[in-house]
Image 1 (tube, rainbow, N blue to C red):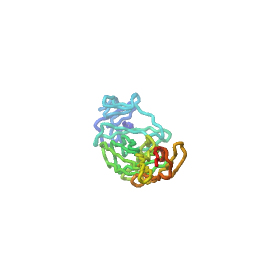
Image 2 (image 1 turned 90 degrees about the vertical axis):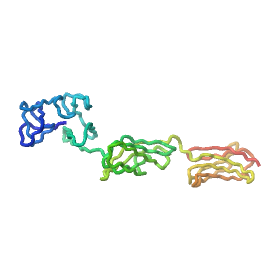
Image 3 (image 1 turned 30 degrees about the horizontal axis):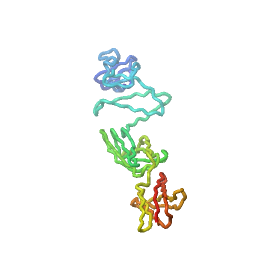
Image 4 (image 1 turned 180 degrees about the vertical axis):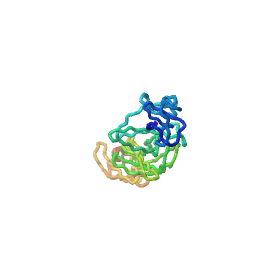
Length: 305
């Protein structure tokens, strides 16, 4: 987008071509500095200000109706109104190092101003998947500038976040980069994740927040087995579960009367075991009910003396 310049003659360099606008202003090479010499409109080397003569890939005028241009466009786009507090992204295609730069003109009212910055990381996507009750995070970047590392952050209320790991960035990159991270804590409730991207100079930005919920309640207890050891006169209940936890149990008779209750400790090898003496029971049918806080399991056993 050209920057308007004042009409008149100035001492200095003369560019290869000149652009003249109907109101008498003119610019050389699309931008005229005060130290450049221009030719008044109508003089020698006068170039009309129209799409056919426009020397750049794109520009703005007050008759265009489209807001973007591709290679088949007429090189003109319309101006867009902007609002305070909003963010705008400028995508420049067909640019290479050493090419002519681009100027963008902002017409502010009522003392408006803006802050421009180049995004250090172009994040293509950020997602979380539930795999065996654990969260696996994946994200991709299309480009990175001065990117030192990513901090993976986690929250259960979407308000207070804690850091659960760091993944090194690529520094500077113009190609697709793929990252992954596994949360080592099982997902038992809706959990929120975000990325904190930090530059080598200490500046940082946050990604969007994504949420992940357990598909079903986490089962602490699996593989329940009941064995009647007649020789020792005992009933042995065994199962697997989360290491170093305690499970509540209740034994009831055939009519549902409570006979015995207590807790079973699951050891560091994820094995839970309960040994009961048959002397504590009369002949009959019983059920042992175990509760892991998420699910209740019931298994039947028979006492015959």
